Image 1: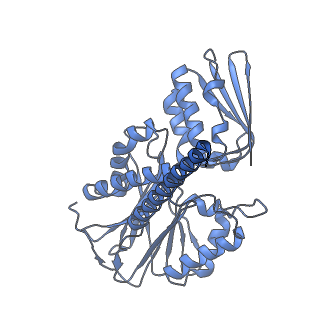
Image 2 (image 1 turned 90 degrees about the vertical axis):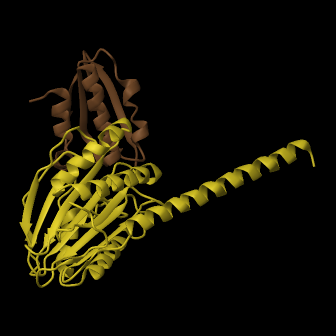
Image 3 (image 1 turned 180 degrees about the vertical axis):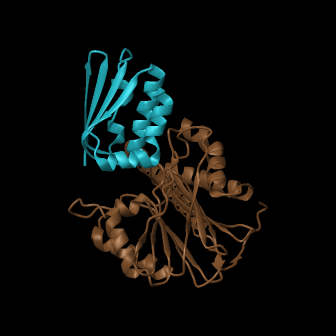
Length: 277
Length: 104
């Protein structure tokens, strides 16, 4: 064997070994993200809650989380990091840390977003990135959803009789946009059978072969048709409808949804952690 | 999906006409920084031929706002569809523009 041929084989072996290491590390990163995202869901006495995130690539930049508070409320967050893939996933982990720390020490969703922006602003600015976040506290005793918004779309709320609920709009700048932001809060009273659907834009911007987008109207009509089902069934139906709509085309953006369905009466949350607020 | 950026200078105004899709797959072709002339006092971003913009594309628009702020230049967005306006409103782009460029 010539020296040239031997060097070529050795070079190929090195590249192959590096590719395998990279593939292994990406899979480990995927496992870390999947584990952190799909952690234990809080158990509500009468209400139902669920969430799922499907990255467009191996890992993604969408984020959702539940944080049961010692006052009986459930803090919910859904976030969307600018971009896709590994860079977005790294910032998603940063966002998760900021939320978990802020949720422990802040009284409401507005304060949580302010604390998150204070924690993340300088890093996001340096990286020319940002995160849109919707944060809400569900109070099962009073039946109110108090929410705040950092550049995210508002959730869709459908009543059991298939009517869409128009909740008060609340706007705020995305995390990483400007420093020292104060995020306003609004509240909505919810009743038995109401479905709260919080989502990222990967759902409504999914594109089919005809280059048409899924759009919010289609989502709302679908949710109306399945509102009487339980959250797991609704979640599966949305994913199935998205797959049918896109006809197997590659997913372009990360897809995340969180569902809260209001049960018969006031409930208590079985906390899996006990933050001091 | 492609992005074509037609950039030209008109006096002290620099215009960027965006044509196509400004997203994760095309944003690197939007070489805003090397095309921006230091003497400009006004930047115009023309969205009239833009078909779609995602969060990465919005990140590129924010970079323009930050550059304009350091150049003391004003920025005009023209030809925006209602969907793009609503997206910018939701995310907070107009608020950032006001804050960075001292607009009323």
